[in-house]
Length: 336
Image (cartoon, rainbow, N blue to C red; front, side, top):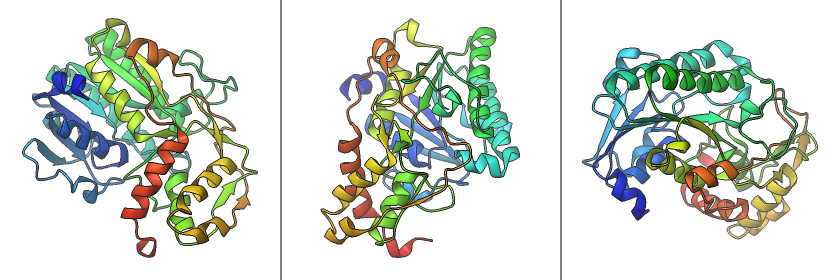
């Protein structure tokens, strides 16, 4: 982390969606690197408790506001060196249920942030892109230059982000880097709600001795990516001095594939260390989910070559750490 500290110390960095899962982890890391952090969040999906560890730190500022308001975006970008744009409404099913709000937040909100960053003279704008951009492309591993047709409103919104970022570099010379996240998991990921990600949701169910339900036969696979790998990619994206690395999109993943049956087996293995009864919990199967792609596996060669990325955690290491965090921090009886 020393290399990052030298480049980020005393720099002012805006993290949008900073009270969310990925955003709050980024805020905490940046504060530990002696950066000055501004967090913009409307708490639609983020949580105040994600900020507990650093909310009173002298280098931390919280702006409660919405990226759909351009004035709020301008305020948040004042005197900012770098933007890490994590604010979005995630989830394919959410976008299918309400495509209009997904579009408002993920496209109009994104455009507001680009305009505000441009007007404030921000040095670099790093944003959360998505592996959903690969759409119906069946080619594995996924390489950045080859994408398919989007399969959901969410996928469309994240692809449009990349197109806008491209234009803002070409026309306004705003340097951008897009990070196509692949199934990120880890500490602070919310297990509650209709659109909870699979890992924290399954962890919570196992802790309550409830049977998790796998969509389909369990052969669908994902490149599950531990939060520390995502943090590393964000840090490399804002600090890279390689001119060829800027104004590109990168897969942010590990380059491994785990299917859902394997995932539940790994979760059982790690959770059973805390509660042996979890090993006996049955896993059930339901129908496939609309808008889901069967398989996802990233090539991370581009990130390695241009950004010097080297994943620190593979799936098993990441799950071990994540499960330990959930066991210490989640109360299964308090689930809403």
